[in-house]
Length: 360
Picture (cartoon, rainbow, N blue to C red):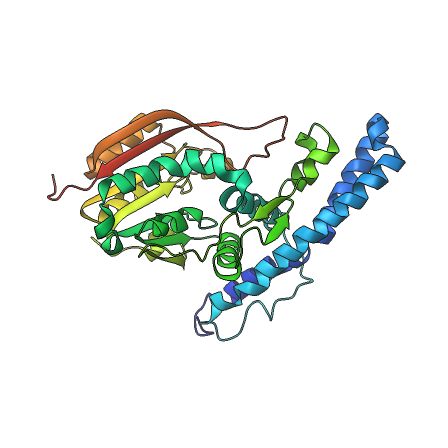
């Protein structure tokens, strides 16, 4: 990307704010928690919020925050290789004192929780629930000896674990991700971590209000839970940045598209269905797992097309897919604090469908 591009300066500014959010994590987090504890102490006068106990807990909390901060800074610095096509390095030229919007600052908590979900032992059960059906279906469709020629796309790849797991099974696996936060995080885990459990992090600090006791929030997890450099059995993997609809428009180019907690992230789910159909080769399969949360619904009525599953299913079939496997009410959670008093469990749909060899 160069300065002749009209969006170049805006992109630099956005990346700069992201870098500033990584740098300011510690200061912001400690200030926010301190204010909340003081407010509760004044409001309720509860024993646990009295000064002596609060000071003891805050000492531990600050230590955990600093450990998280060092981890996040390493993620940010290691992302420099992502911008080799920029005329100037957006990370090294970032204004780290810039005022960061709250919606960006909050994404650091997501990076930590996603690190735990995708790359720690604490996320094993969630990964089994969300990735297990997709991986098993993919393995059942392609014999081991042919997998190195099978191109699998994973839109909304997040921190990259599903992409890695598919490559480990011998496929050519490519992840696509729009969020720089997720791209920075996956780049660090996949390209900078060299041993199992190299780092300890505290992903649940921001969920202290959901804990039974304050100590529940300062539970460490170790990442990654495996060595990301393990041999891939002939498979290969890559990550591509950008909006799925803008990046992938070449017809008949993928053998499989695997979507997990993804198809409801757009304002028009029909666009996703049509694009997935277009880019699949004839005979290729689309494997999907997830609920229908429709992320754009928060923007107000009519901000997005929000189809119930039975109508979405009709759209999928009308576009041309043939559904071959379908499971309903599959329970799954997403980046949940294992010790929280409140948690969410989604009732998900899994389906496997193919693009026919000949148009119907």
